[in-house]
Each structure stands twice: as structure tokens, then as C-alpha cells.
Length: 268
Image 1 (cartoon, rainbow, N blue to C red):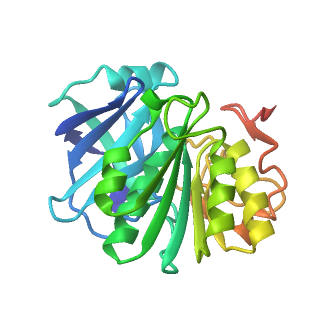
Image 2 (image 1 turned 30 degrees about the horizontal axis):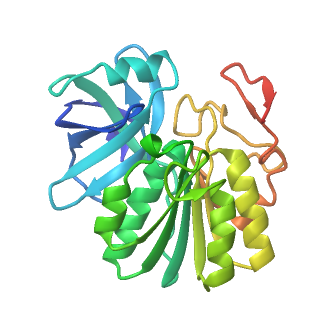
């Protein structure tokens, strides 16, 4: 639809303080074909950034976006109140495909935003979902109550051992893969984490979907800012969700990304 590229100026309906650094902003929105894994371009009348959809509620006609403080733009959003206005346009991109009956979902940090939306939808469809939720410390684990309420099995993981498994989320995911037969894996989080998930699903021969993050300016595939090497896919259009065999074709995966000017930066 042509009008999806014009921001809708909406009042913030509710704000949920998820963690000390993450808030979820909820808006009235006529839910039609929005899918977990898609994103919105969020405009604060000065700048615009992509944010994953974390709530899709077709009953209440609401959507939500969850935002972690990482810079000036996100800090300004965190200072907003209920009733303040933001511009939203979208949804954009290809979301997760719902396949299989038993799924392993692996999320790290704010990468849990599309994972929780996927988990709730998958559970509504009768799928069994195990969710590995990883964070640096217990205070930064997000959506734990929503995961348990959805009917999914929650597997928490913290770097400091303050809750659940002590170590990396990929270590916990490997344990789950050893004990269970999954039809599919879905993942979103730091790319270094997803690179390890890629290696795991290759080892266990399990189909997987990866939600990639790249610097996006337009969100509709015009500017080319989010193109990946070799294949030239635009993450905002052909992605942000890619299957394993597609990720295999992206040589920069887990190696580097580009900043706003297009300069390459090595990933840690």
C-alpha cells in the first residue's frame, strides 16, 4: 500500500518498563498482516530509526515496539511519556515463517523483541516452543513473564550466573539441541551469537531462520545502505529474516558491518 510509506503520527498508549534499559511502547494500530520479525521505522520528528515489532495484538488492535537505550535517539524515546506522539511507518521486511511443530528460539538482549512476537504467535498456532533468553545479568532479561504466559518453555541464561544457566546463550542452545529434536530454530541477537547458532544448526542439521540487523535509512530498499556483500540483498526488503542457506551466501555475516557513511567496521 502506498500509504504505508507515510508516517502515521500516533499517541503513545502505554509504556512498559521491561528492564533498566528497555521500554516497550504500545500504540493503537489496525492489525492486518503484520508478522513477527518485521520492523517499523520510528520517527521522533528529528530522526528516524528501525525498530522490531515486539507486540502484535489483533484483538486489541495494538502493536508494540521495544527499545533499548544505545544512543541519543533511543535515550530521547525513553524520556517520552504516555500521550506523547511518534511517527510510525511500516511494517517492513520479511518476517519469520511459521513452520514445524517443535521450535527452538534463541534470543540475546534486545534481539528478544522479534523472538517474543514469534513465540506468542507460534504458541497460538499450537506449536511447542523452547525459548533461550540470554542477557548479561538477571536485571536485563526481557519478556520472561510473557514467554511463560504464552505456554512456551523458558530457558534463561546470564553471563554472570545471576539467573538460570551461567554462560553464553549458544551454550544453552547446544544443550537443548542435544536433548531435543527440533523442526526449526529461530534466532535474533548480537551477530556474533547468531554466527555460533549458524554453526550449531549446521552441525545438528536443523533448518533455521536468522533475523539480521544492519544500518537502515529508508526501510524500503531505495538507499542501499543495508545491502550485504556478494548477493547484494537489502536487509530491509529481502530480510531482515533469512534462512540458513541464504545466510551461508553472506560472506560478511559475523565479520563486519557498515556505519551510517558506509564504512566497514569489524565485529568483535
